[in-house]
Image 1 (cartoon, helix red, strand yellow):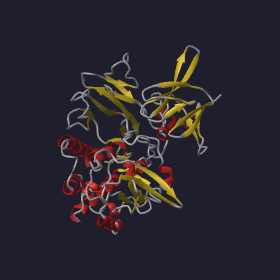
Image 2 (cartoon, rainbow, N blue to C red):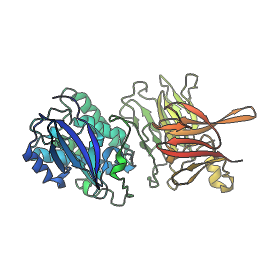
Image 3 (spheres, one colour):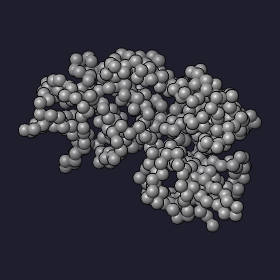
Length: 451
C-alpha cells in the first residue's frame, strides 16, 4: 500500500473522535492496540477498532482536546513551544524503548496530533498495524511544518536560529531516509544544544491564559499542508531590556537587544537570513541614537526599502524608523516595532507622533476606529499608516489626492482577509470607506472614520 492516509472528525453523543479509515487488507495488531490503550499516559490517544466487510476503521477519542494545528495558533512563549517538542521527543523515545514501530505514529498532518489544554499534554494517534504501508511518520517534515506554523513569542533569537538551522540540516541530510530522527538526536538538540530544561514538559506555563477550544471547533476548511499563519499577537510581558523587535512574515518576534543590530546572510549576523539568496552577507544594520532608531543599508546588492518594495520603490541609505514601519531587505519583509509592553495595541505613524502623544496625551485625537463584531471592542486609529497586534499582517493607510483622500487596507502577510466579500490576497490592497466591513480570520470588523 502507498499514499497518505485521510482522517476526519466524528461527533457521537458527547464524544469527539478522529477517524482513520484503512483498507480491509490492512492487518491490525491487536497486541499493539491493547498496549497503546494501556499507555495513554505516555501520550497516545485512546483508539477503538471497528471492522466492516470492506474496511478497517480506527477511532481515536479526542474529546475535550484541541488539534495541534489549532492550538499552535495561540501565541505561546518560546519555552512552552520547546516543552511541547520535548513531550514529542519523549513519546518517540517511549516507542523505541517499548519496541513498537515509531513509523506508525500518524504525523502526516498537524491536525492528527492533539493537545489537552487542561492537562497541558501532547497526544499522538498511533496506527496499530502489523505492517504500516502509509506515509505517515516523516518526523522532519512534521517538525518543520510545526515550526513554520507556531506563533512563538521569541525570547532568545539565538536559540530559535540554532533550532531552525538544525531543521534545515536535517531536511537536507534526510531527503532519502524517510525523515527519521532518533529520539536521542532530538533529545540532544533540545536539552544539550538549546538547553531546554529536562522537566520542561511538567512546567508548561501553568499561569498561561486558559485556551479551551472545543473539539467541535477544530473543523477547518484549510488544506492539510497549509503553512499559513493565523496569529493574533498580544504580548504584554516583553523583556524590558528589549527596546524594539522585528516581526517576520509569520509574526514571529526577533528581539533587538543590542546595537548595532546586524542583518544579513552570514550566520554571525544578529538576524541571520542564511536561506535568503536575495539578501547580502552584510545587508543592513539597525542603530539607535538619542532615543531614535535608524535603518542603514550596508551596500547590499539588492537594496533595503522602507514601507514599499514595488518596482519604483526608492532604495534607502539611512532612514529613521518608526514603530510599525515595514523594512524590506530586498524582498524579505520585517515589521519594526518599538517595545510597548504596557499596551496590546501598537500605534504607528508619522515621525515623533508616538513621543508627542506620550508627552501630551491630549494630542492623541482619534481619526478613525474599528469595531470587532464579536467582542464589540473599539480599536482606535490615531494616525496612518495604522497597524495593531490584534490585526497582525495588515495595514490601514491613507492616500491623498489634492483636497481628497482615500483609505485603503493592505494585506502584508495575512492568509485570510476579505473586504465586503472580496478576497484581498497577500501583497495587495483595496480601498475601504466609513462603514465598510472586512473579514479577518472569520471575525468581522467595521471601519469608521471620525467626522
